[in-house]
Length: 323
Image (cartoon, rainbow, N blue to C red):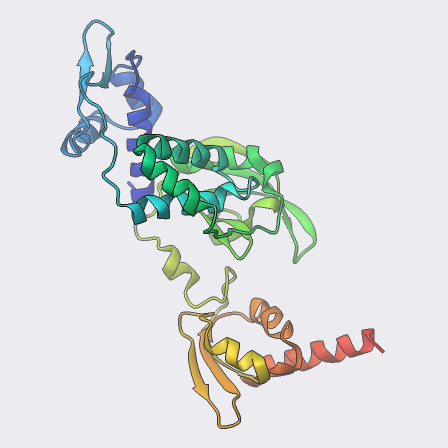
């Protein structure tokens, strides 16, 4: 079983047995989680090791968390509590993001559990420290898509989708096995195995036109790694092979670029005239081209030649537009 699926099943199991009244017996839980008897008892042991005791209530005829079990508030330092509040507020500042309501409730509970004076101090500090998770799409209108994606990822169910492809400018139907949701540079993507293409593909959430959770199950591959899948891609789009890229930055931009980390393979060479050459290894040029072009004449591609020629062609077309 994939690690992701197991974690979701443990969380779901806890949600089924917490609360005052037990409602589910062993078979109910096995059916809901789609697990075997051996897995059911293994999960109980794992939760017991995590100090979450779950017992069978004979009267109620179901499993529930032992009544004398209570979670104690975490013993957080001021910096830890502030980090959680500020991190949560980076999501709360953008109601278009998924999990907005859940994060709002979690932050409220965290603040309520703190001593009055600590809460007062954090309230003053959080107004002066802000991080922003900007999105380039109004995700509030895609709430139902997120709900279905969450269910499918948790239950490891295949999805049927109608998807608009920007490259082909058309809508196609396909079945996918959803692996991971990933926020990257203003957009939220689904990384999933596409049964039509028989490979892992990336889908932008806002381009999903219709979606249904199917009755067919899949197993999340334990060997799958998002980091390995993306490799040295500039953003979210992968290419077929890694290529060494060198870009020369001049003027004020050069000084700013020295302070910025744009890619994990990035290296900086400083030149005598104050300009710099940034080198990195990446796969695929589409996202890199847009990034370079936005810096205008202060950014010059040195290599590879193919990318330099693509930039030249784009600049020529821009010149024709602005005659």
